[in-house]
Image (cartoon, rainbow, N blue to C red; front, side):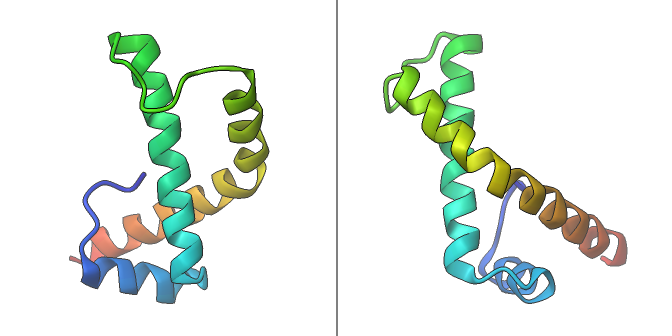
Length: 84
């Protein structure tokens, strides 16, 4: 999702984004599952969970909530890295 996240940067992102830490963790898990599914298609790696219609539907349902927040988090990370 946002590269390597340390405990310090996670706390800073949670504070600046106004997204609760448990929701940030859910977004991270969602994006990891999405990446895992994509890697199975592009790199021939077996996914942790089978790619099927049910998984696709679940990932799409999460997309409408998670993608805008991921872009918000990305903007915060860009701001943090510009200051560093």
